[in-house]
Image 1 (cartoon, helix red, strand yellow):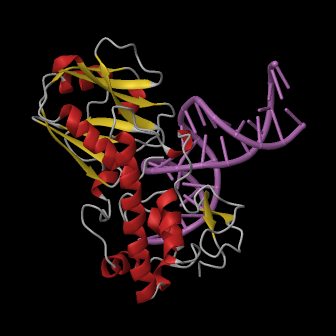
Image 2 (cartoon, helix red, strand yellow; image 1 turned 90 degrees about the vertical axis):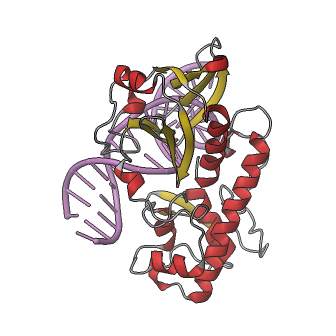
Length: 283
DNA sequence: AACGGAACCTGAAAGC
DNA sequence: TGCTTTCAGGTTCCGT
């Protein structure tokens, strides 16, 4: 599940593959990825919404740079913009122009050197929006811990006045950009904070530990992703990776708490999502 | 304004 | 074995 670290890895890959190059041809294999409904970027105004319009808008464009904010990727073209979200199962892969279609391939960008940069997404929660203005969801993002930095003071300001649980607040992209279900759980465990506590009731010490926990879990995710993407292999996400689960509590309900080694990690549901936590270590 | 929950979509895993 | 159910995830949308 792509959260900030995986999206940042995707950004670096796209930069390597596309920056400075010209899109010779674009092809849309599944029009739903352009769509304004269902997935990310709902109210997306004047965009190239049909496969033909999108392909025409992309063809011949030079890619200046690839930016990221939260879980959104932003391809800056010579004329125009692309805002892309990986949703749940989206990924970008590099192929050669004459390679066969990928399973679940949705869109491709072909450049010089027979390069074929492809967007693949089984569940189609992701989007590739060819548009001249950022979608509302992207404009409304809170600060990005990696881009903007995050300290206790800034975190406190973002959580002030939020009466919902701190776990749900962390996952709200308008509060902070880039944190999803995994890193919210990990950060709260590292900080020793009960995920059910009200977001506006954390004291200065809580905020310090939570800001540090967020920075730490993102840094580790980034280091892990860098390792995985350093070769020429494709991005792999945790659940499809055969190597061990690298997280402290995510996906570990029922096993022993790695900190106190006494309590069994519990699973609870918040806002329809599961949270794993230790009732002894997280208060 | 803020919250809860369904909907979107489909593969994988668990249950029968 | 094969069918059915449940779960997972990020976001939008709708109703309260």
